[in-house]
Length: 353
Ligand code: NAD
Ligand code: TYD
Image (cartoon, rainbow, N blue to C red; front, side):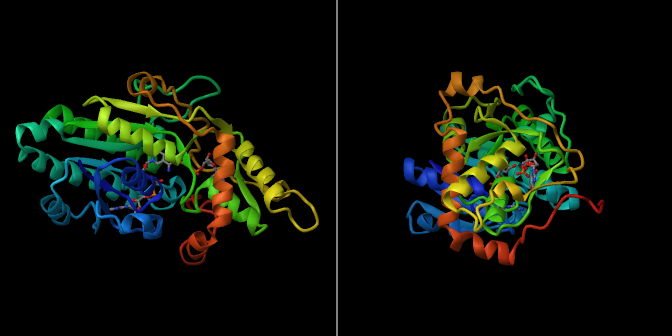
């Protein structure tokens, strides 16, 4: 297949592109606007590959998106392009509404016109895979899990924009017959994640011996999935998922935020001990909570396990060690980002103190 991947220069998108080129025979067309969160250096191996093409295009730019479809005539779409950081969505929701909702609408509309022009066999095989988040389901208490039937109840501008886009995708399938499939995944971590997110931010702050900001009391719970496992799961959903269905993807790795930060501190104490011998954990600083902070996310991943045979291959202890080691070995990747794009300042207080 020729797969049009949107957002392929981002964290998960680049893992998907690397996976498709390394583990399959598919060709990839990467459509990415290259926002602050993108980095073509995450794709160095891909750029030299004859099965890879890059198009710098904003998915909201309908004529440009039509041009890409006309030039490349894809067999499938994997739609990952999005504004993805909850804290930024609190400070400036406009970009999230534009890219995540309007951009998804433009892609659906162009994909539909393209799909209608395909032969019967090609149209039957075509897929539009929308990559979404478990945050659309809102917050859980101490017990329970999100299933594919959990009602949508998003809390942040980010998660509500993703929920909106999920609804659009479902509507294009039910109304126009576009063969779509949706996946909703828990928090990803691993190499090439932009250092605004909890795990890379904590690693780089440890290295700089800066305070490690923990929102509220650090008791909020997230489920963590190693990004390369997510890329593998997405490929299964695209190729074997049933049209019109959605699949939850999780890591079976629920952790309180404080436990995540402490785990990173323990690894850093071993790999990069501080002068004077204090633990990195002494840098932990409890800060004002995120407004609308969802308490807990947890995934019931039985559907993707039973239907598509997916299980995560990397447990949290292995994945977090690998991730810390990766950041320690890739200063040339992250140093320009923290110097030119984002220096670690607090985001998401929406003007509150
Ligand atoms: P990211 O912020 O690292 O990357 C997003 C990419 O999309 C960037 O390369 C950016 O340039 C591109 N992009 C943004 N706006 C665009 C536009 N208007 N046109 C074209 N390209 C544009 O995000 P990520 O963490 O890799 O997330 C990828 C997808 O997975 C998103 O849809 C996100 O909602 C979803 N998701 C993320 C997580 C997570 O933990 N990071 C979990 C579940 C689902
Ligand atoms: P984040 O990586 O922003 O992902 P998401 O909000 O999509 O789950 O945050 C993960 C969790 O960590 C979330 O509960 C907020 C919390 N957090 C902190 O405690 N400190 C931080 O500096 C950041 C960025 C997040």
